[in-house]
Length: 401
Image (cartoon, rainbow, N blue to C red; front, side, top):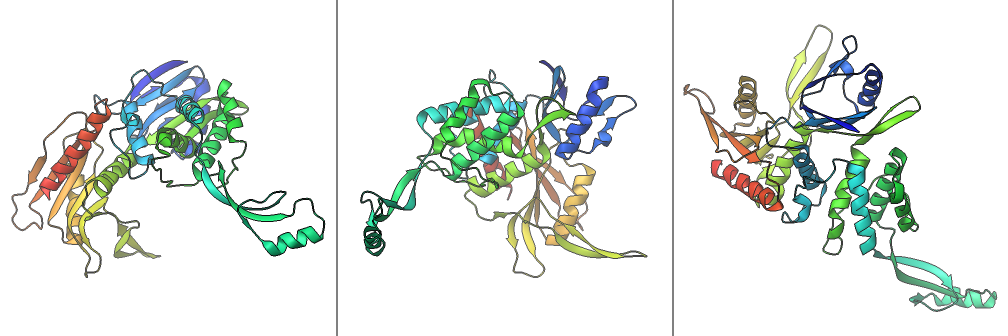
């Protein structure tokens, strides 16, 4: 299939038969179709998204807007978010392989084949059955009754047995079934035989913790969650055209920084809210409603004080323009005023190592006199680069606090 590469937020002229397909695809994944000019046959892709979309005869690759950062670097961040909190940053999962395909299902099937050859994870599960032989702990009363009744299976036993029917395998099986519904897996369809004793689940188990015995499943689990949570298919009528993966990188970058600072910094003063908090009541001629806000992240948040305070506000800005836009500065002043904060740090992605930046205000009456910018290099093709960039960012942020 022909690949067309466009920059994040770019525009593309569509063929006549592609307009309805892309419109249907956007509706299915919750993207506003107002970005499609139906009269001109042009789509202006939303600024937040990177990824790929399959259309008849061609695949559209939406590359990140940061020069030197590829879609595979974004996938690495996705792996980082989907793996457990105890993830080892030195592992090969964080190496960017230029030769590997963008195709999530293809990569998933490849990794699943590796896992099944090694053996699917197992856990001991408690069982209770009547057997012809003694196993585990015996219930004497029921066993005696079975003897009197002349049953063939007389021993009422409770015992532990190794089972493949565990959450990790349930996730992998569900992802495999969804993948098989989306594309022809070829020989990969034979993998379903490995899950003959794994039950199908309606709810996808989330936040599964991997241990030393199951860490070999890390990459395939990340891919499985991507298939289950983010992968869709281009279709229109009775025809299908392939898989789509659109990633809201604004959201992903925010979650990336949150996980870095809460999990890897070793400092428990980094926190974030789960819900918005109200700050005003708005009254109009026909109704009244509350206005609310939610900063991306806080340092030294005091929830028990009144009013609530935070020593520092951290906000994630997925931008390539110069730091400290007026809109961002106004927003930070509002947050700082609400939480009586002494410091503000804006966090930006970059494709190289960039020193911290500083915005100083001349007006001495301002609550905050400085706003800082900290950059994290999300490029680099090895797990060592990835690890070094993460810890360098942590050190830079701590130096600003």
